[in-house]
Image 1 (cartoon, chains in turn red, cyan):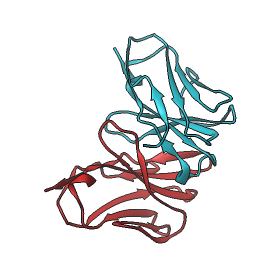
Image 2 (cartoon, one colour):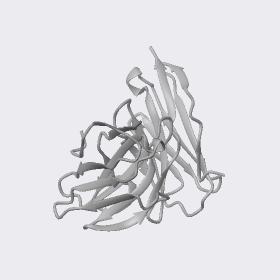
Image 3 (cartoon, rainbow over the protein chains, first blue to last red):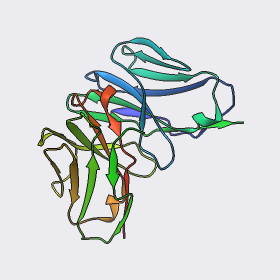
Length: 109
Length: 114
């Protein structure tokens, strides 16, 4: 079993819809939980991070962590075509960061 | 833009050759991490350098090595290149080690091994 599981998609949704992206993990030792956005031919850009269970909101983005279920989510409200990218979940354990495979998201105008 | 730069942007090598990739960290950052991202995969941690010392390593063979310089820029060296080394190589700089909230990625170097 991989430490971090993420559905690679692609996920296509119409503009304005709410997007839900998810990851599961197996290692209880993970301390920090992050979401990165990666546009084609670019490096990942940090969107959200959290270190506790619950929700964290930043503009149109909400990160949710459920440590008891080992499940994290990223919600995007009022999705825009510019949100089309690959979204990577990532988790910190001791001395390294483990990334999911990434989910390719397409927002249809 | 994050202020992290990498060179070159693209590189083509043949199997068995050696390659050196370079990274300049964001101003004020003293830690550089290197990642390998194969097509359709998430980045995989190679190693991290903190104040010129290796500070954590992922599951990569010794032919992957690195350096960090006094100005905190860094190099990734790969010897005896294999076809599977073809990937996007990313560096990320930070000021507090591996706390994710401060890791800023460069645009990457795309390496193709033929």
